[in-house]
Image 1 (cartoon, rainbow, N blue to C red):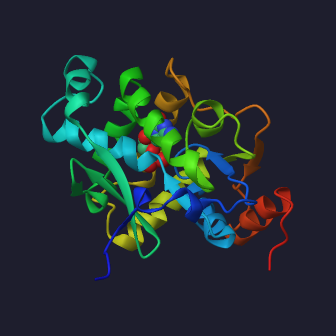
Image 2: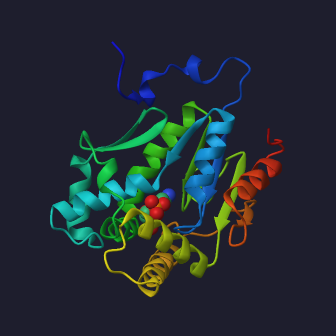
Amino acid sequence: MEKEFETLSDYTDEDYCGAEEEVFSVAIDGPAGAGKSTVAKIIAKKLGIVYVDTGAMYRAMGLKALRLGYDPADPVNVIPMLPGTEVSIAYADGAQHIFLDGEDVSGLIRTEEVSQAASKISAIPEVREKLVELQRKIAEKQSLVMDGRDIGTVVLPGAKYKFYVTASAEVRAQRRYLEYEQKGKLDGRSFGDILAEIIERDDRDMNRPVAPLRPAEGAVIVDTSELGIDEVVAEVLNIMGLVEN
Ligand code: DC
C-alpha cells in the first residue's frame, strides 16, 4: 500500500548517503517576506535534496499556545507546555507538512495571528532549544536546504553554504500585500498595515537576546529587492558553483 506521507525516519542512512556521497547543508536565513522559502524550495528541488522550513515549527508551537489561550510571549505558561508538545515534519508529494501532536496543521499556520505568535514564542530560549535539537537531528542524516532565522548562526554553523536573503521592508510588504490580495486574505488591511506587521516582526526577530536574526559569519548576502525569483535562484546557484541548466 502506498504511504501518504514519508517521514524522515522512513529512510536508512544508505538512502541518504551512498558511501561516497557527501551530506551537506544549505542554510538560508533572512527576514519575513524576503523570498527565502521560495528560493530554498527551488534550490532543494534542483539539487534533489530535502527542503526544511523551520519557521513552520515555530508556527506550530505558536498555534498550540494560542489554542490553549496562552500569551505566546509568556514563558510561565509556554515552558510547562513544552514536554507534552510534539512537533514533527513529513513529506507528501515533495511538500513539507507540519504536525503538532500528531495533527497535520499545515493549513492552519499561515495567518497573521500565527505569524506574530511564532515570532513571540520563538524568543523563549527553551522553545528554541527543543526545536534546534529537532532541526539538527534532521540535518544529521541527509543533505538539505534549511531556511529560518538562525540556521547559519546557531543550528548549522558548519553548513557548507550559507545565505542571508533579504529585501527592503517596503518591497517585502509590497509582495505580501499582492499575495494576500490575490488570495483574498487582506481582511481589510492596507499596505501600511502589512508594512507595520513586517516591521514589528523584524524588530522582534532581530532584537531578541537569543539567536537574533543576523547574517551568519561567511554568509553571502543576497538582496532580492530588485531581483526576480529566477535571478535570485541563478545567483545562489552561481555562488554555489553550480551552473543553472
Ligand atoms: O519563516 P517564518 O516567517 O515562517 O517564521 C515565523 C517566525 O518564527 C519568525 O517570525 C521567527 C521565528 N523563527 C525563528 O525564530 N527561527 C527560525 N529558524 C525560524 C523562524
